[in-house]
Image (tube, each protein chain N blue to C red):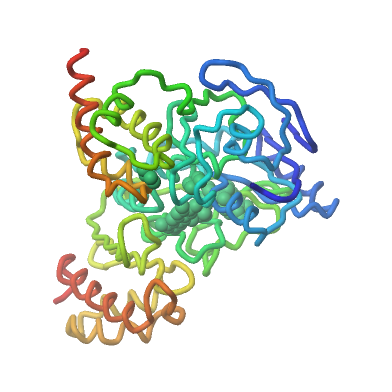
Length: 159
Length: 278
Ligand SMILES: Cc1cc2nc3c(=O)[nH]c(=O)nc-3n(C[C@H](O)[C@H](O)[C@H](O)COP(=O)(O)OP(=O)(O)OC[C@H]3O[C@@H](n4cnc5c(N)ncnc54)[C@H](O)[C@@H]3O)c2cc1C
Ligand code: FES
Ligand code: FES
């Protein structure tokens, strides 16, 4: 049985790199990413599971990193917004005006990236169900919705 | 951020988990079993709970099982609501799981955590109540399998240090005709005003409700009235509020009068749709 009674050094697989970090067992993954690893893309919005600004991928699944302990991510592959480079969804967000202030954007991008990985071509009602996990106070969601459609077109073009 | 320190353990068997729970309890550490953590992390951050240690059950293989074994479906307590939503064995459970919280929370939130949680809703228990499921529990004294109905009264009555390991559903219960209605004030990711399911079991209608009272329930008294063919459907609906096992909730999401009126309307629809009205 693994036991963490006090501050411990752990290794996290973040964006394909092994990062050694010192954590308290009570540290959330969000805080560790931002404050120990310097990856500030995942944002603290509500830290209550409501807004989705903190979304990261854990073994490919989008999760709210404010509700996860960093220790739960040991042995799993973590992808943050910094790990997404030149993806179709990023391009589409730029082209379709998927953001204004940008605070929610990294969470939306990570979640939408996972959505498109799982549902690359069909909408199948999944878009709304998945993206209801994220809140945006600026855009009214129109640009975000267009960006998802556009990203699908870009993905199709490259296939 | 959780503003106090705690210990974290990741046992690989229920025996290890129960033993470390006992040891930590003796040391006054106030341990808690940990499933998806969505409730525990939130409450720790708000400091409404202050456990000295968390025992994460996700390293125990039998708690993540989801399989048909002979004439029953076995569901591990650490199966997430997303996994339940994506399975085809038990369509009503998939449907109910799909509307709890939101998609990224459901990727973490476990069935066991939802059933053992402190919040009033615990919606995922509804199809297990109507399916006459059994629960497999493990503790220092060993393990036991009991009907959920006998152990669930407002909350799951676990002995101190006991773990909910699995839920077992008889195969004949998996594909029964059913009806479900979840009412929210604003939108689907809200906590519900209430969530009601009805399941046709031979000539009887089984009914379970979350959010209406301070706890989810399936009530024998209410079901008796709902199935009383000597009464008209309207009479059954009129008498139903008197047979609830608790007072109707009155909070910022909705008043008791509003909840009751809406719920009676849905109960009438349930009777009509499921053929229980004659
Ligand atoms: C944003 C958000 C939205 C939500 N919306 C809803 C909703 O719409 N409907 C609803 O019903 N709930 C909702 N919830 C509440 C959520 O369902 C509860 O927090 C749930 O109980 C947590 O499940 P978990 O696996 O995360 O449990 P944890 O947080 O890990 O644990 C919850 C409790 O269960 C105990 N426990 C966990 N597993 C076991 C086990 N196997 N054996 C014994 N004890 C155990 C823990 O000790 C703890 O007391 C929401 C939560 C959030 C954060
Ligand atoms: S910061 Fe995690 S959901 Fe808002
Ligand atoms: S762009 Fe400002 S919150 Fe979404």
